[in-house]
Image (cartoon, rainbow, N blue to C red; front, side, top):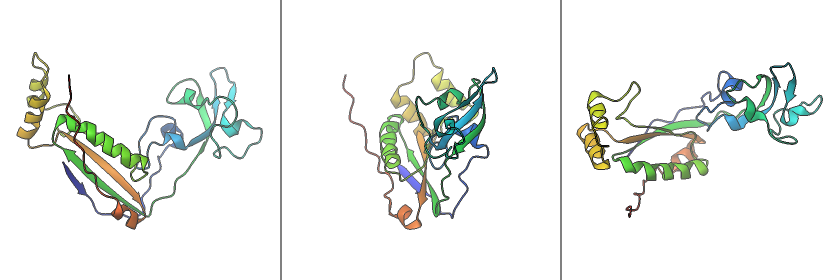
Length: 205
């Protein structure tokens, strides 16, 4: 397992360019997903009827972003990247730009190392230490696997963990990689311990 950190940077812009389109979908960002920041909304239905949700359902309300649930069932999810209606207004919770921001990259060599990697990163997320993690495999970059990896994956029998691990070692690449995003006061970022991946328990059959 390896962990490398970039230099701390000052305040950066964390906000989506189109809040309504991003917040109602399943986007990711340095501060976690944007969806929970969406408040009440107003949507026009196909028949022209106007639907208001959350606190925005109150006549003349100026508290669209105060409390997203409002009264009664929560209907906001009906309009998440769908064609149920057109969102024309939405309350949105803005987050302050952090004092400092830093990225770290954690790499693990074996296929099953993903399990303890996810468990460790989840703990950091739950503690509020990091924003949205970005997982990936250097073995399969965008654009599809390399011809060598494609040949291994397309063989008649499914490749074993050992074969895949051996392939990663031959390519001199880690099997998994995760980018962590730390934010907050510079002293707090520096105080967080960097991940130490616990190995999974041996499987029994």
